[in-house]
Image (cartoon, rainbow, N blue to C red):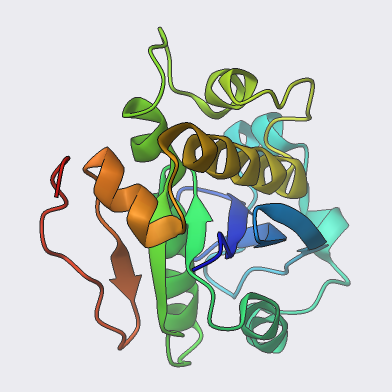
Length: 201
């Protein structure tokens, strides 16, 4: 099977997982980036305060998303872009929690995706002092990008997975997860393969 996946990254307005204010998506086919897209998101009511701390990180303020579409209006585009791909994110638990929480806050069904975490895969691939996205991406040969800009972070995440797959001679993301002893997770109604992935099996 080919190395196909969609890398994803969210930025949030505040500490609420439902407060997505931007997203970046990068589609990889056979280990190559073939498409990418990003957009701003207007967070749902009750989750739409922009905290100074978050703005300091990503530079997005309330005025930037005033005319952006709401989560419910953009979710179909996100799902259509990712299609049936495995999603990959750095600290994937955060990004998957954003999808689930934003759907819950807006009373829509959470889409079903399997996902892998590039942070966990990086920990099993490189020997680094830090596995933060900029450091892990540099180990993968992806440097000088604008960290905390959603599309740039998604591109960095994709680069880590592609590089790690080559390093481990993995044929696809599930194979890479098995080789690195990590697991695929799942959101929505799909069931992930949650069996322990052990090196050598």
